[in-house]
Amino acid sequence: MRDVAEVAGVSLKTVSRVVNMEPGVDDRTAARVEGAIARLAYRRNDGARNLRKGISLAMIGLVIEDLRNPFYATVARAVEEVARRHGHAVVMASSGEDPDRERELATDLLKRGVQGLLIVPAGSDHRYLYADRAMRTKVVFLDRPPGLIEADAVVLDNVEGARRGVEHLIAHGHRRIAFVGDPPTVQTSVERARGYRQALEAAGLPIDEALVRLGTPRVDLAEASTRLLLALQDPPTAIFAQNNRNSIGALRAIRAVDARVAFVGFDDFELADMLPVPATVVAHDPAEMARAAAELLFARLAGDQRPPQRIVIPTKLIARGSGEIVPPSPQGVDFATREAGASSRAAS
Image 1 (spheres, rainbow, N blue to C red):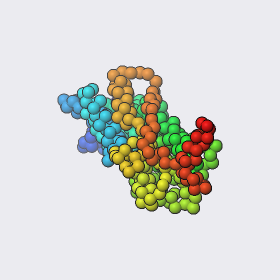
Image 2: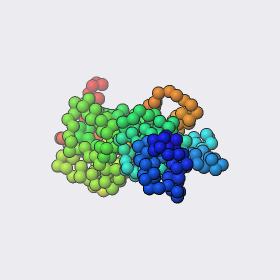
Image 3: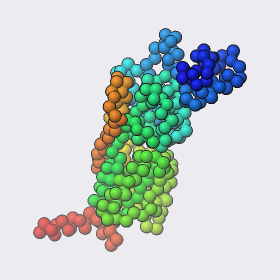
Image 4: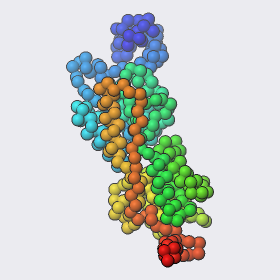
């Protein structure tokens, strides 16, 4: 506020009156103060105002995509557990994968005086946080890295996990493998699609862009995209789904048309092991990622001055059955039968 007063050439009291919309300031002076506020990217700190009034609220903010998604519900609960241990409450908000909404929510939480902020980014430009980071606000990103700024981030090993899932399908004889994923504006979708492509290239398989379907962030859209894939003249014999919502949509489509198609999904999901053909998945622990991000945030609040950290959470393949379905051979001979015969001849 002192900087605003200096730039505008007025007293602190005048700035306070403008910020709090109190009477007693003429229009020309108010315009000068508002211009200085915009120039300096000043925000009123409601937390500091509460402290002056004797109200002590230790809070951190958490901006996620959608609390209805079990993945993010697990993240939120883990963050709450860490925050409670550190004597803080958590204020949560959902961006709905909207970059403008993410910025609005993050800005509002910082204005309310949260001591730190955890963000699952929806956007790719986080320079709007520069002013707050200069004022020592601690920010840690999780699940996806920040855009155009250097900051702490805790992410999954997306490329390696996706590559391993697709390699599993290739190892079971599949050559036409489809990818169903979120829009290309989502970083996790980009990285998992990269792992998909790397696995095909390493195996010497062509990448058929007709089998790559991006832009399916909802279950119904993933189901519709998968139905279109299965209706192709030369359909895929296997599908790799980019996340839990894509997986559910893809599996619904496979069941609806009663297709014998192998399946591997990134993210485990509830009842995946209880399906008629249990789902093979690239699994990880969302709670581990959330705890790591929250602990890093509280370390920063406690004075940790290390350069920005990037923590990568590993994944693992859980083979349950769907990823082990083999494709029919062009001659109509089951791949597994053919492989078993070859192994028997080699042994003799």
